[in-house]
Every structure is written in C-alpha cells, then in structure tokens.
Length: 120
Image: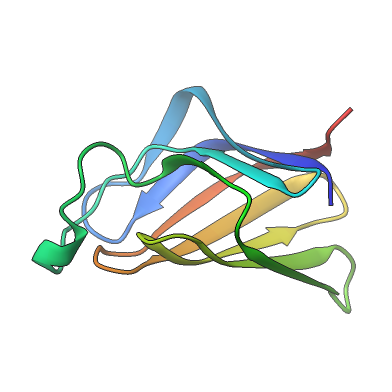
C-alpha cells in the first residue's frame, strides 16, 4: 500500500479534457494519503462551497480496499478521505499506467489518467 499516482491527463464531467503539465499526484504511504490534483467541475450543492481546491488535502482517516483484476493489475478503492470526496477508484495496470475516477459529495465527478509507481 505504498504507491504514487502521477496524473498527466484530466477528464472533467463538465468542460474540456486536457493534458496536465505540472506535477499532480496522489500518494499512499504508511497509512497516509496525500492528494494534490486540480479540480475542474460544477458545484451541485451549496454544502460543497468550501474554500480552495477540494482535491488538495492529506488524510489518515480513510478506508482502502484492493482487488486483483482478472487480466492483471489492481483496483484500489478509497472511501471517505475527506468530506468533499465520496470515493476514489484507481485502476492500476501491469504496464505502470493508471486511471483514477473520483466521485465527489457536492460536485461533479472527475477522472484522471497517468502512471503509478511504488514509493521508495
């Protein structure tokens, strides 16, 4: 459970897909989750009107489950890492590529593509 997802492409529900040129990532290491991703989307409820980027946080209070895919790789699901995020579902492929789908509590969903590597 020690890995780093580096995002290089974002696909928001609303707006255009785009390549990412800065360093954006999610790191899971020793029970700590660090998230630094851009968010482009739509606020669905005033309850989600927090200040700042909802996908820039650290957490030690989350539920992580993993399963092996039949065709290789893994699916990692993280639930409740912060009040804005319902779930983060990562698909890690054997070749090091990865996808991330995020379901938000009060905002539109968003997905990312990139790579995954073990944390040293």
